Length: 381
Image (cartoon, rainbow, N blue to C red; front, side, top):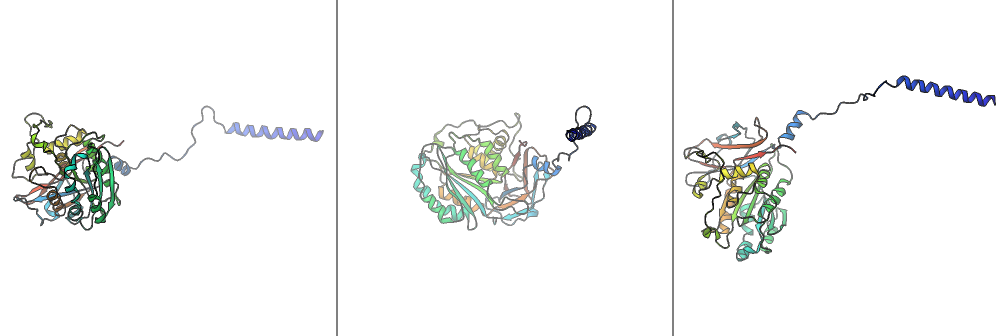
């Protein structure tokens, strides 16, 4: 009995000692957080990368003489590029040699039934003249839906066979949705370009009527992404009804400056980018419309949508409703793609957010220069 009482007494002493130690260690009042490693802050260089998502601007520059012939004897030292007025160092320069990644968007609506046989014959031109021996291509068809008909391949026979078996579907024309898919496909191609290794040139070639019906994507949004991904858009305008010739002209001019202020580049005598001769002939300020569409992400630009898309990305739109056939238009585009300069730079010392205006000048007189006019960097989400 005495042993049992002794054991209980000993246990009670131990408990009292432990309780006293715990109380001695416990602070009075609210407990302060234990000292731990400080929260890791995002390094300044990483913050900059999050803010500026443009690591490389890699763009085609088309140079022609007064007769319209391509100029092939220029060097990197002959070019001067500014980004928001800040001169840039050219990191990559090439003449027609960089291989291509091409997404071919083809209208497959029932509206082109009359010219489907002609469309099916374009495969060999698309592979030989546009894609080239070292390039790759994918084919996307669109009507009321957007269908990937052929994934990227360097096998020309696969592209040609796919084009030869084209079939039409509904009468829909979701052009902008198809363009959004094309930009996404090109943006995801690996390896991703860097300043040291710009990789393949990214081109989207559109064979379609120049209208959209029912797309969820907005033209301006598509063009923003295309510019940031260095995608150049070329367009062959199809016409099955010649409705363009019969339709009454519409006022699609969007005011991009106060009254009395002209948005067109200066008169001849200075190097222009992009080339504005076609703009003046059409009576439409395509450059102004292109910049406006990218800045505002809007679909108000409709009647000249493809011309605007090509102007915004440095490409060209060729209509086929006059004396130019589909085959001739494709051939002209292919010839330009493999005869133009590719110039790349990493934007430096420029304002990060908003629209960046690119100007390309060549140190030689009487040359016409076409390049994309800029790109837009939005606030990070």
